[in-house]
Image (cartoon, rainbow, N blue to C red; front, side):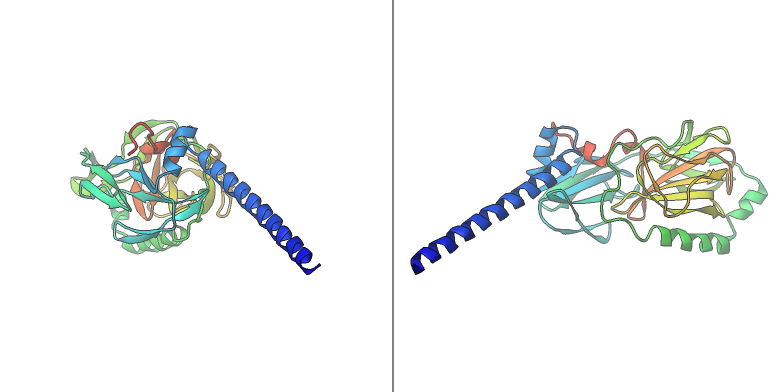
Length: 303
């Protein structure tokens, strides 16, 4: 009788183990499906997910950004920071900036590399009034606003808050591309690490992607401004607005109306000043529009 009871016990244990294994397999398959859906097609997803390390795109220019995926939990060093890859699906991810002044060359990322090519940026000359010039010298007010901005960008969601392609935040003429070296009244002002879209005052401004509003108020230099967290230390910035249509804490979707074009703050005319901040580095928005970091994976060039 004892041997029969022992056999029943062992059989029950095997059955429980089988159930647990099936549940784990189903859970893993669900995670893999969620992750795969973010890529352009199943083959691109298969190649990325089956690799120990993947960076995409594999070649970028100064001022761009790129995605990293590992199949295990990792912390990597990049641009003087230690950045932890965060879990998504069956892998671990980070979105990383390439500063516009970063030296061109190949850099190791785990067992792979990212190649950075040199990019030339043009020069822009602006003339402003003495009153506007004086605004730029008011360091006390500028610093007070910077404290608010730094606080708003200090805490980002540890997950992707976007699920689709990024959209252009406004329709208008590109008056200043990313990376221009700017002179104001003949004096070097710095590098314009955003894009300016000139448009009539009152034109609609849209959220470039889904996320959470972390700041929406009038600031000294940038006027009515909005910052949206998109997760993994990626924030979008919308400045010089004539009207704010969202509040801090609001969750927004891609293409949602969030404000109106204006010329508030230090501005020479109605336009939207738009920027991406990634780990507190301004990165070129052009790579994001009508795309997403998952779509930067090129299966034909991978490996």
